[in-house]
Image (tube, rainbow, N blue to C red; front, side, top):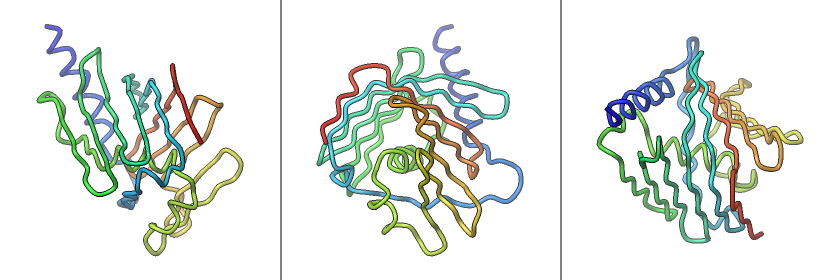
Length: 182
């Protein structure tokens, strides 16, 4: 019964996150930045809160970044759904059997890098027609003048991402041990 509940919750969450919003859509560019381009190490335990339509889902994440690798594990109800490792060249993804195929490691990595890496590391890899702007705590990725991806730093431990291309909002709250070393 527990496994069925986890499977159902995860399917609802992830298929909703993969559903595109109505209106014009666009494929967001892949960033694929080197781990070292972050400029410091990071270790954090995070609470992820997904909003899509009227649905809200919460997941836990463990994130570690050093000069050579990004490591991320996402869990639902204490069970690991996906583990990602990125060394700047290869993305290795270990997925639970119950995780829907709609969950794409590439998109998770891109959201992470868009949110945390410096703007000066992101701008050079953007394709023609894409623009990254920052105003205070707000970062926006635009294509032909329209904002498709937005990141707002709510406070020192909270980021909010709005992805209009894929139709979801994600709040990332650091909950413990967020050791950073510039």
